[in-house]
Length: 548
Image (cartoon, rainbow, N blue to C red):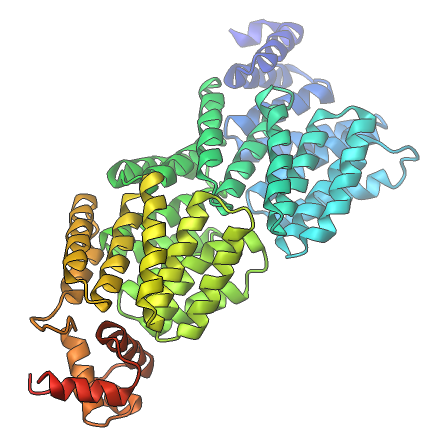
């Protein structure tokens, strides 16, 4: 049927379909026109875009290259650069950095012969500036975004203006200037939501802003923009890119609010959608989130596989993998992994996402000094205009470290403050874990009734969620038929301390690491309200704990 229309009719229908964002029809009509005979490079650009938006990535690359060469053959260097830019950007989004760099370089060389400044000069600044952000130099990216914005205003290019404002906002957030950065991101989103940008720019900015909101722990904005992105995708049923990202972001919010089964279902759908066509970068995020859900449920083998699959697809597996090692009892490996992750992350916003796990793991590893540094960094980030989620994480980490330091009263204050926020933002799992901190602090202060009530409340939540490792930990952390509230392992360590053994000697006797011994000793001091090994020895003999 299409073949009988001829090129003019097919082109006209393809262009109309393109304008109405009926991507499959646009692709079919324009593809048919191109099959009948040569079409203009502008229509090749449209066909490439339709191919990209319907998931035909390899074909879109070929079509943009074809459009690029057609423009060059007609002496239209600026248009050729624009086609090269979209081609390179599509490759970059797939993770094909080397060929993308080659096309960006070709485009830059072509512009050298252009006497007048044009919008394409601004477009080529965007990837360079973004690269500076991820290289840990966001301040150096700001002048480039400012210059791109100036060019966009001079040339009246809405796509370039939006990309520039969005990049400027990302750079400010990466520098820790959250309020200013968010204002720039919101300004970019006004253009996106108003329909002032092309489909590819719209999808890119939606997803990047949502990612940045997650980096900032801004759940409200992340939820709002995820809903908006979902509506935008649903208005274009043929759209393939960005739908997977919608599902991943929705799954993350469902997990936070305790709907773990629904989150798992959304994540599995996202993984399937992001697997076809292959090479979509966001699949790494879906696999990482799958690992998180398996870890929380105690399916450690599945979590391990998911984290490794995510890593193979370019998503760093931390802090999830380090927390998995902690749950497996491999505390030293967990501590090494989280330290390496923090040392290698220079962006303030992304480093903050590692700090809650760092505080938890380093407390468990018996390194309260390093745990305190992580908790303090998190508190500083929260103080600089942090969101409720970030403040709750900071209070939670501070409470855990205070408890390890023996400051039970300070731990109780911080943990109760964190619990209030967890309940306000409806995060049942985090609230249950916070109740365990309150229980530990209450027990250290001699308030066994409060400790028992908080523990029971936490147990109820863990059971409802299916948090198997936390339930198992509850059993291990319960008082071992001892009025002291010490666990069986802590009683073993106390007997060794009372016998005059050093941490190294205790580690050799019990076949555990010295750091683990130090953690147990710290817990003993906290629970018994003591400050020295001599006092612990005296307490053990006075209360007949050694004979036990």
